Length: 129
Length: 225
Image: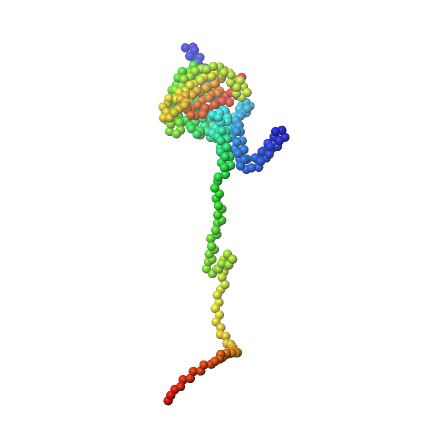
Protein backbone atom coordinates (compact mmCIF):
# COMPACT_ATOMS: atom_id res chain seq x y z
CA UNK A 1 0.00 0.00 0.00
CA UNK A 2 2.82 2.33 0.95
CA UNK A 3 4.56 1.63 -2.35
CA UNK A 4 1.42 2.36 -4.34
CA UNK A 5 0.92 5.67 -2.53
CA UNK A 6 4.52 6.67 -3.16
CA UNK A 7 4.25 5.78 -6.81
CA UNK A 8 1.01 7.71 -7.18
CA UNK A 9 2.51 10.76 -5.45
CA UNK A 10 5.54 10.64 -7.72
CA UNK A 11 3.30 10.36 -10.77
CA UNK A 12 1.29 13.39 -9.68
CA UNK A 13 4.46 15.37 -9.08
CA UNK A 14 5.74 14.60 -12.56
CA UNK A 15 2.42 15.35 -14.20
CA UNK A 16 1.83 18.61 -12.37
CA UNK A 17 5.38 19.86 -12.71
CA UNK A 18 5.71 19.45 -16.43
CA UNK A 19 2.48 21.30 -17.21
CA UNK A 20 2.99 24.17 -14.79
CA UNK A 21 6.27 25.28 -16.35
CA UNK A 22 5.37 25.11 -19.99
CA UNK A 23 4.60 28.25 -21.94
CA UNK A 24 2.22 28.23 -24.88
CA UNK A 25 2.39 31.10 -27.34
CA UNK A 26 -0.99 30.86 -29.03
CA UNK A 27 -1.08 32.24 -32.56
CA UNK A 28 2.25 34.01 -32.09
CA UNK A 29 3.96 30.63 -31.67
CA UNK A 30 4.27 30.43 -35.47
CA UNK A 31 6.81 33.27 -35.40
CA UNK A 32 8.95 31.41 -32.86
CA UNK A 33 9.09 28.27 -35.01
CA UNK A 34 11.99 27.84 -37.43
CA UNK A 35 12.55 25.74 -40.53
CA UNK A 36 10.16 23.64 -42.52
CA UNK A 37 8.58 20.32 -41.58
CA UNK A 38 7.46 19.65 -45.15
CA UNK A 39 10.67 20.53 -46.98
CA UNK A 40 10.90 18.28 -50.05
CA UNK A 41 13.75 15.81 -50.15
CA UNK A 42 15.90 15.97 -53.29
CA UNK A 43 17.36 12.59 -54.06
CA UNK A 44 20.91 13.15 -55.25
CA UNK A 45 20.92 9.94 -57.27
CA UNK A 46 17.74 10.86 -59.12
CA UNK A 47 19.07 14.34 -59.88
CA UNK A 48 22.32 12.84 -61.16
CA UNK A 49 20.45 10.45 -63.46
CA UNK A 50 18.29 13.33 -64.68
CA UNK A 51 21.31 15.43 -65.58
CA UNK A 52 22.95 12.45 -67.27
CA UNK A 53 19.79 11.91 -69.34
CA UNK A 54 19.73 15.58 -70.28
CA UNK A 55 23.38 15.48 -71.39
CA UNK A 56 22.77 12.42 -73.57
CA UNK A 57 19.57 13.84 -75.05
CA UNK A 58 21.18 17.17 -75.84
CA UNK A 59 24.24 15.60 -77.42
CA UNK A 60 22.20 13.44 -79.79
CA UNK A 61 20.73 16.53 -81.33
CA UNK A 62 17.80 14.88 -83.08
CA UNK A 63 15.45 17.69 -82.50
CA UNK A 64 13.35 18.67 -85.52
CA UNK A 65 13.92 22.11 -86.92
CA UNK A 66 10.73 24.02 -87.06
CA UNK A 67 10.68 26.39 -90.06
CA UNK A 68 10.24 29.99 -89.15
CA UNK A 69 7.03 31.27 -90.65
CA UNK A 70 6.96 34.97 -91.30
CA UNK A 71 3.53 36.26 -90.54
CA UNK A 72 1.71 37.68 -93.57
CA UNK A 73 0.09 40.99 -92.98
CA UNK A 74 -3.56 41.14 -94.02
CA UNK A 75 -4.36 43.41 -97.01
CA UNK A 76 -5.17 46.94 -96.07
CA UNK A 77 -8.76 47.82 -96.78
CA UNK A 78 -9.55 51.46 -97.10
CA UNK A 79 -12.81 53.00 -96.05
CA UNK A 80 -15.20 55.08 -98.07
CA UNK A 81 -13.64 58.19 -99.49
CA UNK A 82 -10.10 56.80 -99.10
CA UNK A 83 -7.63 55.31 -101.49
CA UNK A 84 -4.50 53.21 -100.91
CA UNK A 85 -1.30 55.06 -101.58
CA UNK A 86 1.99 53.31 -100.76
CA UNK A 87 0.25 50.99 -98.35
CA UNK A 88 -1.53 53.73 -96.52
CA UNK A 89 -5.08 54.96 -96.80
CA UNK A 90 -5.30 58.59 -97.72
CA UNK A 91 -8.39 60.67 -98.49
CA UNK A 92 -9.15 60.43 -102.21
CA UNK A 93 -9.29 63.63 -104.44
CA UNK A 94 -12.80 65.06 -105.04
CA UNK A 95 -14.20 64.58 -108.61
CA UNK A 96 -15.25 67.91 -110.34
CA UNK A 97 -17.21 67.96 -113.62
CA UNK A 98 -16.58 71.05 -115.80
CA UNK A 99 -18.74 71.70 -118.92
CA UNK A 100 -17.35 74.16 -121.51
CA UNK A 101 -17.84 75.08 -125.21
CA UNK A 102 -14.79 75.64 -127.30
CA UNK A 103 -14.89 77.24 -130.84
CA UNK A 104 -11.92 76.80 -133.06
CA UNK A 105 -11.03 77.39 -136.77
CA UNK A 106 -8.81 74.91 -138.42
CA UNK A 107 -6.93 75.44 -141.75
CA UNK A 108 -6.07 72.20 -143.35
CA UNK A 109 -3.44 72.14 -146.17
CA UNK A 110 -2.95 68.90 -147.94
CA UNK A 111 -0.91 67.76 -150.93
CA UNK A 112 -2.19 64.90 -153.03
CA UNK A 113 0.25 63.00 -155.19
CA UNK A 114 -1.13 60.46 -157.69
CA UNK A 115 0.90 58.00 -159.65
CA UNK A 116 -0.45 56.65 -162.98
CA UNK A 117 0.93 53.42 -164.19
CA UNK A 118 1.05 52.66 -167.93
CA UNK A 119 -0.41 51.17 -170.03
CA UNK A 120 -3.72 52.59 -169.37
CA UNK A 121 -6.60 50.43 -170.35
CA UNK A 122 -9.64 52.22 -171.64
CA UNK A 123 -12.78 50.33 -171.99
CA UNK A 124 -15.29 51.70 -174.47
CA UNK A 125 -18.74 50.51 -174.73
CA UNK A 126 -20.51 51.26 -178.03
CA UNK A 127 -24.18 51.61 -178.10
CA UNK A 128 -26.07 51.29 -181.41
CA UNK A 129 -29.12 53.50 -181.89
CA UNK B 1 51.31 14.25 -67.92
CA UNK B 2 52.99 16.83 -65.75
CA UNK B 3 51.33 19.08 -63.21
CA UNK B 4 51.34 22.15 -65.43
CA UNK B 5 49.43 20.41 -68.24
CA UNK B 6 46.92 18.98 -65.80
CA UNK B 7 46.30 22.41 -64.29
CA UNK B 8 45.84 23.95 -67.73
CA UNK B 9 43.34 21.26 -68.77
CA UNK B 10 41.38 21.65 -65.51
CA UNK B 11 41.33 25.41 -65.93
CA UNK B 12 40.19 25.12 -69.54
CA UNK B 13 37.38 22.71 -68.62
CA UNK B 14 36.24 24.96 -65.77
CA UNK B 15 36.24 28.06 -67.94
CA UNK B 16 34.42 26.31 -70.77
CA UNK B 17 31.85 24.94 -68.36
CA UNK B 18 31.14 28.31 -66.83
CA UNK B 19 30.68 29.90 -70.24
CA UNK B 20 28.14 27.39 -71.50
CA UNK B 21 24.56 28.00 -70.43
CA UNK B 22 23.54 24.33 -70.60
CA UNK B 23 26.53 23.02 -68.68
CA UNK B 24 26.09 25.75 -66.12
CA UNK B 25 22.50 24.54 -65.59
CA UNK B 26 23.78 20.96 -65.10
CA UNK B 27 26.31 22.21 -62.60
CA UNK B 28 23.70 24.20 -60.65
CA UNK B 29 21.31 21.21 -60.56
CA UNK B 30 23.97 18.86 -59.23
CA UNK B 31 25.14 21.47 -56.74
CA UNK B 32 21.58 21.77 -55.40
CA UNK B 33 21.12 18.00 -55.27
CA UNK B 34 24.33 17.32 -53.40
CA UNK B 35 24.21 20.34 -51.12
CA UNK B 36 23.50 19.56 -47.50
CA UNK B 37 20.32 21.05 -46.08
CA UNK B 38 20.87 23.16 -43.04
CA UNK B 39 19.18 22.22 -39.80
CA UNK B 40 17.32 24.83 -37.78
CA UNK B 41 19.18 25.21 -34.52
CA UNK B 42 18.80 27.00 -31.20
CA UNK B 43 21.44 27.37 -28.53
CA UNK B 44 20.80 26.71 -24.84
CA UNK B 45 20.63 30.45 -24.15
CA UNK B 46 18.20 31.04 -27.02
CA UNK B 47 15.95 28.25 -25.77
CA UNK B 48 16.06 29.61 -22.23
CA UNK B 49 15.19 33.11 -23.47
CA UNK B 50 12.38 31.94 -25.74
CA UNK B 51 8.99 33.06 -24.37
CA UNK B 52 7.37 29.99 -25.92
CA UNK B 53 8.34 26.35 -25.36
CA UNK B 54 10.10 24.75 -28.30
CA UNK B 55 10.90 21.29 -29.58
CA UNK B 56 13.10 20.18 -32.44
CA UNK B 57 11.65 17.82 -35.00
CA UNK B 58 13.54 15.74 -37.50
CA UNK B 59 11.12 14.11 -39.90
CA UNK B 60 12.74 11.30 -41.85
CA UNK B 61 15.72 12.57 -43.83
CA UNK B 62 14.53 16.17 -43.79
CA UNK B 63 16.52 18.85 -41.99
CA UNK B 64 15.67 19.62 -38.38
CA UNK B 65 12.86 22.13 -37.78
CA UNK B 66 12.01 23.98 -34.59
CA UNK B 67 8.36 23.81 -33.55
CA UNK B 68 6.74 26.03 -30.92
CA UNK B 69 4.04 25.26 -28.38
CA UNK B 70 0.92 27.08 -29.52
CA UNK B 71 -1.74 25.64 -27.25
CA UNK B 72 -1.88 23.48 -24.14
CA UNK B 73 -5.46 22.30 -23.80
CA UNK B 74 -7.28 19.11 -22.78
CA UNK B 75 -3.97 17.64 -21.62
CA UNK B 76 -2.70 17.91 -25.20
CA UNK B 77 0.36 19.80 -26.39
CA UNK B 78 -0.20 21.44 -29.76
CA UNK B 79 3.09 22.25 -31.48
CA UNK B 80 3.20 24.32 -34.65
CA UNK B 81 5.82 24.74 -37.34
CA UNK B 82 6.70 27.78 -39.43
CA UNK B 83 5.05 26.15 -42.47
CA UNK B 84 1.72 25.63 -40.68
CA UNK B 85 2.05 21.99 -39.71
CA UNK B 86 0.84 20.88 -36.29
CA UNK B 87 1.61 17.95 -34.02
CA UNK B 88 -0.83 17.16 -31.24
CA UNK B 89 0.89 15.19 -28.51
CA UNK B 90 -0.82 13.57 -25.55
CA UNK B 91 1.53 12.56 -22.78
CA UNK B 92 4.37 12.00 -25.17
CA UNK B 93 2.44 10.22 -27.92
CA UNK B 94 1.57 11.86 -31.22
CA UNK B 95 -2.20 11.46 -31.48
CA UNK B 96 -2.95 13.79 -34.42
CA UNK B 97 -1.04 15.54 -37.16
CA UNK B 98 -2.09 18.38 -39.45
CA UNK B 99 -0.42 19.97 -42.45
CA UNK B 100 1.68 16.96 -43.46
CA UNK B 101 1.22 15.06 -46.70
CA UNK B 102 -0.13 12.04 -44.85
CA UNK B 103 -1.85 12.81 -41.57
CA UNK B 104 -2.85 10.79 -38.55
CA UNK B 105 -6.51 11.68 -38.07
CA UNK B 106 -7.41 9.77 -34.93
CA UNK B 107 -5.91 7.36 -32.46
CA UNK B 108 -8.28 5.30 -30.36
CA UNK B 109 -7.97 4.07 -26.79
CA UNK B 110 -5.54 6.77 -25.67
CA UNK B 111 -7.07 6.76 -22.18
CA UNK B 112 -5.39 3.50 -21.36
CA UNK B 113 -2.12 4.38 -23.08
CA UNK B 114 0.70 3.09 -20.81
CA UNK B 115 2.74 6.20 -21.68
CA UNK B 116 0.46 8.15 -19.35
CA UNK B 117 1.93 6.40 -16.35
CA UNK B 118 5.56 6.60 -17.49
CA UNK B 119 8.11 6.57 -15.97
CA UNK B 120 6.99 6.52 -12.35
CA UNK B 121 4.80 3.45 -12.61
CA UNK B 122 5.98 0.29 -14.27
CA UNK B 123 4.07 0.28 -17.51
CA UNK B 124 1.63 -2.26 -18.67
CA UNK B 125 3.25 -4.60 -21.08
CA UNK B 126 0.73 -4.29 -23.88
CA UNK B 127 -1.61 -1.75 -25.40
CA UNK B 128 -4.03 -1.92 -28.31
CA UNK B 129 -5.30 0.91 -30.41
CA UNK B 130 -6.74 1.82 -33.79
CA UNK B 131 -5.59 4.55 -36.14
CA UNK B 132 -7.24 6.55 -38.91
CA UNK B 133 -5.16 8.16 -41.63
CA UNK B 134 -5.83 10.48 -44.55
CA UNK B 135 -6.70 8.86 -47.85
CA UNK B 136 -9.72 6.97 -46.47
CA UNK B 137 -7.66 4.68 -44.28
CA UNK B 138 -9.70 3.95 -41.23
CA UNK B 139 -9.50 1.70 -38.17
CA UNK B 140 -6.10 0.18 -38.67
CA UNK B 141 -5.45 -1.97 -35.59
CA UNK B 142 -2.17 -1.44 -33.73
CA UNK B 143 -0.69 -3.53 -30.94
CA UNK B 144 2.14 -2.28 -28.75
CA UNK B 145 4.50 -4.13 -26.45
CA UNK B 146 6.64 -2.10 -24.04
CA UNK B 147 10.02 -2.88 -22.62
CA UNK B 148 12.33 -0.90 -20.36
CA UNK B 149 15.57 -0.88 -22.19
CA UNK B 150 18.30 0.69 -20.09
CA UNK B 151 19.86 3.80 -18.68
CA UNK B 152 21.34 5.99 -21.35
CA UNK B 153 23.22 9.28 -21.40
CA UNK B 154 21.73 11.65 -23.95
CA UNK B 155 23.43 14.73 -25.35
CA UNK B 156 21.31 17.75 -26.16
CA UNK B 157 21.89 21.52 -25.96
CA UNK B 158 25.46 20.85 -24.81
CA UNK B 159 24.18 18.94 -21.81
CA UNK B 160 24.66 15.33 -20.83
CA UNK B 161 21.41 13.96 -19.48
CA UNK B 162 21.02 10.60 -17.79
CA UNK B 163 17.84 9.05 -19.13
CA UNK B 164 15.75 5.96 -18.90
CA UNK B 165 14.86 4.53 -22.27
CA UNK B 166 11.53 2.81 -22.91
CA UNK B 167 11.03 0.90 -26.12
CA UNK B 168 7.67 0.25 -27.74
CA UNK B 169 7.39 -2.39 -30.42
CA UNK B 170 4.32 -1.72 -32.54
CA UNK B 171 2.67 -4.31 -34.77
CA UNK B 172 0.41 -3.28 -37.60
CA UNK B 173 -2.30 -5.89 -37.65
CA UNK B 174 -4.35 -4.76 -40.64
CA UNK B 175 -4.39 -7.18 -43.56
CA UNK B 176 -2.89 -5.72 -46.73
CA UNK B 177 -4.11 -6.06 -50.28
CA UNK B 178 -0.55 -5.65 -51.51
CA UNK B 179 2.91 -6.84 -50.54
CA UNK B 180 3.93 -5.02 -47.37
CA UNK B 181 7.53 -5.07 -46.25
CA UNK B 182 7.05 -3.56 -42.80
CA UNK B 183 4.41 -4.92 -40.50
CA UNK B 184 5.87 -3.28 -37.45
CA UNK B 185 8.25 -0.66 -36.13
CA UNK B 186 9.81 0.53 -32.91
CA UNK B 187 9.16 3.73 -30.98
CA UNK B 188 11.62 5.10 -28.42
CA UNK B 189 11.01 7.29 -25.35
CA UNK B 190 13.79 8.85 -23.28
CA UNK B 191 12.80 10.13 -19.81
CA UNK B 192 15.07 12.25 -17.64
CA UNK B 193 15.99 10.02 -14.73
CA UNK B 194 15.98 12.86 -12.22
CA UNK B 195 12.73 14.67 -13.06
CA UNK B 196 10.90 11.92 -14.93
CA UNK B 197 10.12 14.22 -17.84
CA UNK B 198 10.03 12.98 -21.40
CA UNK B 199 12.88 14.74 -23.20
CA UNK B 200 13.17 12.84 -26.45
CA UNK B 201 11.14 10.42 -28.52
CA UNK B 202 11.30 8.75 -31.91
CA UNK B 203 7.89 7.70 -33.18
CA UNK B 204 6.56 6.25 -36.40
CA UNK B 205 2.85 6.58 -37.06
CA UNK B 206 2.32 3.97 -39.78
CA UNK B 207 4.45 1.46 -41.71
CA UNK B 208 5.04 3.84 -44.61
CA UNK B 209 5.40 7.03 -42.55
CA UNK B 210 8.74 8.64 -41.85
CA UNK B 211 9.89 8.52 -38.22
CA UNK B 212 9.44 11.67 -36.16
CA UNK B 213 12.40 12.45 -33.91
CA UNK B 214 11.26 14.95 -31.29
CA UNK B 215 13.57 16.57 -28.75
CA UNK B 216 11.96 18.69 -26.01
CA UNK B 217 14.44 21.57 -25.97
CA UNK B 218 12.66 23.78 -23.43
CA UNK B 219 12.25 20.92 -20.98
CA UNK B 220 15.94 20.11 -21.31
CA UNK B 221 16.86 23.75 -20.70
CA UNK B 222 14.90 23.68 -17.44
CA UNK B 223 16.59 20.56 -16.10
CA UNK B 224 18.85 21.14 -13.10
CA UNK B 225 22.07 19.48 -14.19
